[in-house]
Amino acid sequence: MNYTFPVTRTTNPKQKPDPDHLHFGQDFSDHMFIMDYDEGQGWHDGRVIPYAPIAIDPASCVLHYAQMIFEGMKAYKTPDGKIRLFRPYENAARINRSGARMCIPPIDEDLFVSAIKAVVMADVDWVPDRPGTALYIRPFIIADEVSFSVMPSKHYHFIVILCPSGPYYAGADGKLGTTKIYVEDEYIRAAHGGTGFTKCGGNYAGGMKASEKAAAANCRDVLWLDAAEHKYVEEIGTSNAFFQIGDEIITAPLAGTILPGITRNSVITLLKDWGYKVTERKLAIDEVYAAAEAGTLGEIFATGTAAVISPIGLLSYKGKEIIINNNEVGALEQRLYDTIYGIQTGTAEDPHNWGMTIG
Ligand SMILES: *Cc1c(COP(=O)(O)O)cnc(C)c1O
Image 1 (spheres, rainbow, N blue to C red):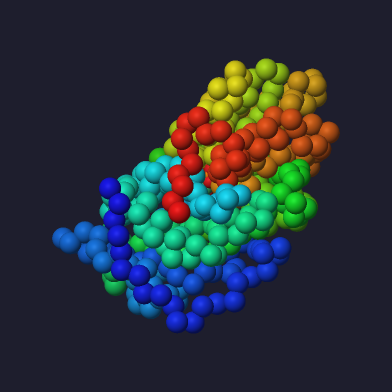
Image 2 (cartoon, rainbow, N blue to C red):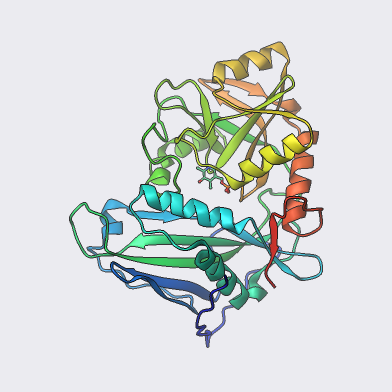
């Protein structure tokens, strides 16, 4: 089912950023979607309005106890000018799983996807078309009941904002590059029974300290280890991690402490389609280092909406560095990137019907 919403267009359109020098999360489009939730009434009054600051009472629940969740997805332009989303119902399902954990009321999946379509189509001329670029979509829900009791809010706003984003890698031609990753052995991200599987704001605030350590070690991101033993690899920053050892490709299992990435799921599906042995299991960082020593370590890469595939060229753990795959982009990484990015932009065959053309 497709919902429709009233659209109030801006009378003051912004200057669009230079399409050859797009940043991430700095320039926002002309419109946003906003919808209210009231206890007893449910979600109501979805609408597209001009992008603007929102008024929020300083005593709102979200500002003190961080009752909020978000999603991250993209709209892509095809070579013939059409607009596509990638598996948007997966984002709808995930925001509701996050919401169930954070006591935030669910949004009907059709309503969620209709809201995304409505705001993207209101700002359709903001979808960039250079290789590797896309319109990043940030849906989020904040608890804005005025109350200091540590209880689920009775009022929420669901908001969707959009920002054109450039290619993840410096060489603006959309070509992949390798990154250095810092294996964090002190701080942890998520424990069993916690909120690791949700996109809730607090998970990311708690990770910033480790990101600072990674940057100080000249690394781009953090590879988290499990909270109980600081032994098993979990995920990398805001992406999931895959390790090729011998003829096996390993990624951490969905046991509640990692984010169930939609790119992760797509990669597992494609690898199985292609006849690879993919295993979701616990993998000790020591096993990765031993494989490097033994010469059986293949490619290591991160997967997520931002970069699709991010090849890792170096790991740094307790002061010991290993070089992965000669610090080069691997054949498998390139094939996965080309296939998924091709499906997203409508240039590759889409056997699982992951792409959704919306305009
Ligand atoms: C969003 C996110 C991912 C990747 O999810 P995708 O759906 O593939 O974009 C992985 N880990 C964390 C912590 C995330 O926030």
